[in-house]
Length: 591
Image (cartoon, helix red, strand yellow):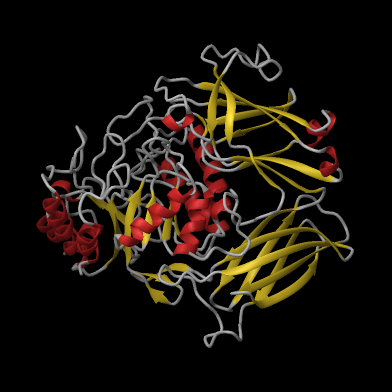
């Protein structure tokens, strides 16, 4: 496995790597606040008697050291650090949270530094002044508030707290890494990277923390250690756009594309320069990848791609939503590849950014999906839209992300078939995503009633290959909503007023075969199979039925692993396959 040149193991933000990084994960003080007295009693000044928790694991998990199932909607954390004041002179100290569910307030040395709402994406506070005022001491206190409200983006977190059906134990508080970095007083805040297969160039949209005169950006693009482009551009305002030519004499075809089979990546080194002096360096990378719908085909770069995907929930037995370690991402992606998949639909979760990094370097197409709310109110629209655009901005640069999915199965928009307001919300998410990213398909409502959508995705959990064939062999009838046989289609493919316009069709959830394989209880779709041979046989028949149907551009098997009460995975929760991997692969690839 070849890492990109800038990456440091454990670094939480692989798309913009800087040198002064400090991991804050580990033991913190922790307290429940069931009576909601913490702020009133000033816990940010005098933390109560507490227990220890291992960050970033939620208190519900074994890895946290607490493993308590009870519902606690407000939790507090505290840790104490020291920084050398000399290293902060002329610099800024940034505190980053990769994910804290759901509303987070932060104090440093008793001073309130900010609040963030949303459970799945990165947010940052500048804590320089608070730490300098305390001569380098940093007492960080965090309050996290969560709810069971259905208007909150929850994903697969149960609205009753514990496992029920296909919803799992909820997650409260910090569940992704926490870290600090020291940056210059004026620093490179972000870079949006947009490669173009049409013109063989890449565009960098670089943003400073604030505009100051005299700054320039040197951008060096390389491949395999050989320089492809080296440009210098001066900032005349806070945001700078730079284009770099990718035509490269080191390759006969001039450019190198990213695909799951050949995940070629270009390295980028940024140098922020002030009056000829380099004041900051940052490393990044990109892949020349462009996914689009062309007629009824999905095109990756210049070629059609047939998607063989697996649904993944990103849950782990002892650590819940949080991967037990960085290598868990590698193992899951390699497991999916070994099973014959070229894509992963990361379901109802914005994963740790290192997951997308490993998908980039290992070669795995990803559908990035917003965790859903479950009831539509005006506040639903506000919360979902804000957090979804955070996710799009954060993961835009990853070449492995081929498709955006803002809504799944009408969750959060239950009356979208006839409700004009809910249809408008679906359209708003679609067009807001396209406004930020014109290069990738957007699926307006995965599996169920679509409005405007670049790909039409359908869910079908029939366990009969014959029924699957009978239903989709008349694809136009299915897309018109006229075929309604048993499991084949319980929902309409389009909301009222919308219809099929020739888009690619993907069966983005199917199979979900129940097989206990040693589990005491649980559920899957249809009748349970009794042994591994029956499991492989049914999977083979279902995949074969789909692959024989003209007009379908791919599929997604439910699912990679068992999760809590669900025993419909290709493996159990510990990633132990339910049948020999070679047999499963033959069923999936039809070899």
